[in-house]
Image: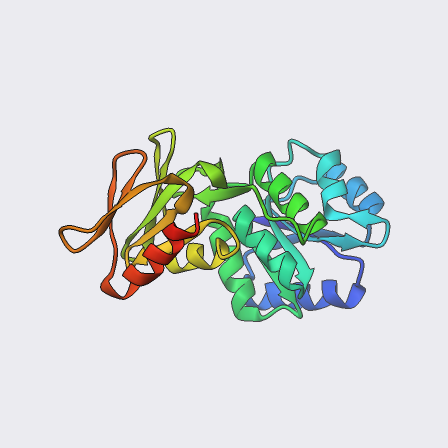
Length: 247
């Protein structure tokens, strides 16, 4: 029977989450709750839960403070947060599961099922989350890519391009490494809105820093610095030419 610990400084939030877990996942054994960093630390010294539901903002600190006390914690972490746009962006860049308050039972069900199947977040992923929440106006410089086997943290400037493969995305890095991620290209296009990425085609999102040249023949395509040729959709040609004129 999987075990769970709930840490939140709002008693009502803990009670609601407990009730939802009992209803949706009667097989999960809730072995403790806490309302602060101090009490959470005391609890985690005694218990090692399979699942940890952790509020980010606690009365005497943050959930990150608690994780620093237990750097080798093996629990699958599901963060809980009040709705803030920059916080949601932070979770997406770090590829860490989260729940918004008030918690939707369907979202809870999805998060728990995902947590049971996926790896625990790496220290680097937690760092990305912390940095992006702490500096909401700064552009994230790294992103966690969640594959079926591992979580890979890469520098965004190291990404040459992304290519759609159905509902999945292939990342090509300047090191030559290729990473297959089970998220759509559209999701990454939205994430990289403020970075130097451009959607040239339904299946291609490129980092414009790696463009070598635009070739007009054969319908028009971009030659990247790593030698890849990227098609340009007819409706995107004028945008591509204008973009290159401004580089």
